[in-house]
Image 1: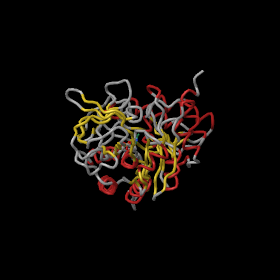
Image 2 (image 1 turned 90 degrees about the vertical axis):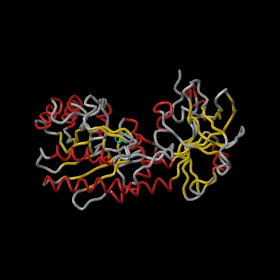
Image 3 (image 1 turned 90 degrees about the horizontal axis):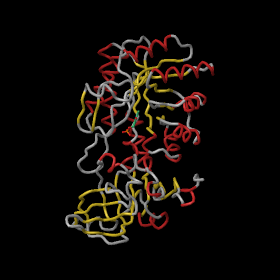
Length: 411
Ligand SMILES: *Cc1c(COP(=O)(O)O)cnc(C)c1O
């Protein structure tokens, strides 16, 4: 098997397993796709990479080179961006409980926009802005009431979500009052993020229509940011909407709705994370032992929930192959299990795979988002290396953690 024209066996020899592999040809194509299709003649557009999906310096360098903007949610993510000299004016800073330290860092580094979640956060920003005598651009995170989970969406739910404020709620009104009386806080618009791994474009359209409705209250053209959450293909059960369709549907919806309302906006933003990196990512494991129980057959791999928590956390499904046996008959119904002391440490349950032996390599697909970024050292597992492959060449992006690094901070 080859990824971006690099032999996976060679990667195993060079970097060991478990190993995160990213197809950078594919990643760049995804970034370009959004950048090329998410455009309008009527207003500015901005495509933000939601860095929480996979935030390492090397991927941020690519995002920067491509001209993407960035969504950061923590001091760590901001600091990573700073380290690659990402233009802070192109960063939107998110989070429902940003600390004083995080806000000071963001404002001190002239972050483009702070996406404010609640009134108390706005008070903290006001205080910092006053102290620094510095203008701070903010948009308000709105809970639009549109809530989407994978294939379904509901319009009037989640009014008690931890994220955002409801339009014209007491919290919202207090925020607008503070803004009106502030010398340094500049209100720029609204943000809404309705969920993740969503396949129903109607959900995004519904959220966008709501934000446009709220923008009518303001005379100046606003920035509307409709978040991310575009679904990807984990297994053959998923049929994601191509990014050109997603982009153009949203742009067209905005055009129609703005024309209907006779309204102008300054800018429309999207924040794809998963749909940029997920399908570019693969995880390579070595099969250790194989075990039969009365009703099951296990292929044990040298990683597991420490490098991919999603199956345990969300019952997420994945597809896999045995390297070199991609075309062999899939004769065994197996469960691919990790090495942690948890019964839930299963990467794939009941998948048909060919006969395997110890030492074979198993590859899982679509692990590029929320794999590495959610990895842990549970059971003192070492974080795998991350390798980028592009046009027949490989390049280490993150070194494998060593045992000494694992204990580095322990006294
Ligand atoms: C998680 C998140 C995203 C990205 O979601 P994906 O499903 O990875 O596209 C974008 N914006 C906000 C505010 C988020 O919380």
